[in-house]
Image 1 (cartoon, rainbow, N blue to C red):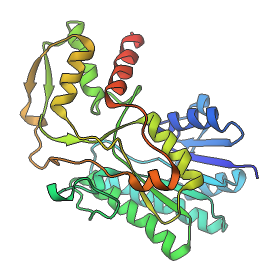
Image 2: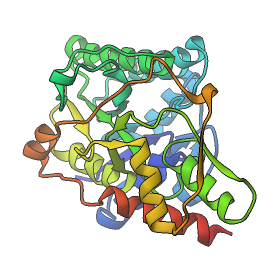
Image 3: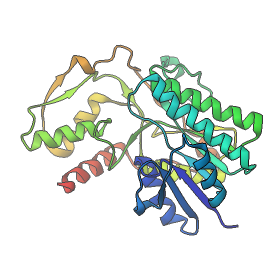
Image 4: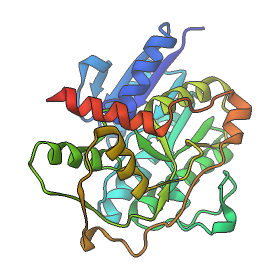
Length: 306
């Protein structure tokens, strides 16, 4: 059977790495990316998920056997905009699929932000963890996750929910952790700034390299079970302070650290790390890239970009 993979948000950070991975390891799969930004290097066409007629035409013409749904807002924005992008546009995609009575295996890219407030005794968290999102983004992604489960249960759309924890890797947006620190270390090295600015140093996160995420999505396309949710993480608890210490080791730079009150979030999630035994057991996936290696690769990417 000839597989045809449609990827929404294909020009984004994760989308680019998934396309590279599929082209390298599964070259016989036909790929079509859709995004608001055209990037011909990654086989994309311009499309907006808010335009149902446009999406229906693309689905009809391409007839995908598989879909990876990545499109959506990832940065801080209003609750209205987050829901419009992450919830209602996802609903339009699912409605478009139903209108054509096609049933492609679909992976909905979720986020660990849906878990929100975590009690220490609940760590590490598995997929049965109650959802207690904090903030507009987490709330919109939790709603998207529930919407995906709803379409599976009501309409039997074969949707798999991938809950991605904090991302790392070359080409990450400079406003996201850890790239925001790498960008500042680079500027400090070049004499452009005198301090590294940060918010809370103590919160911990569970980072996963985007290249391991691409591999996880490939496994889920063919071994994931529709209706199920899967954590994708490094299964390692790393504090913000540790990131700065790692970068000092990697770069040989020991900068001055400035805690900026505007970046201190009193509602910040204190600790989070995942149990990924479910995806490991069902797909044989496991993360291969250690967090420090991700930082090394990110630092080299920034240095070589000059």
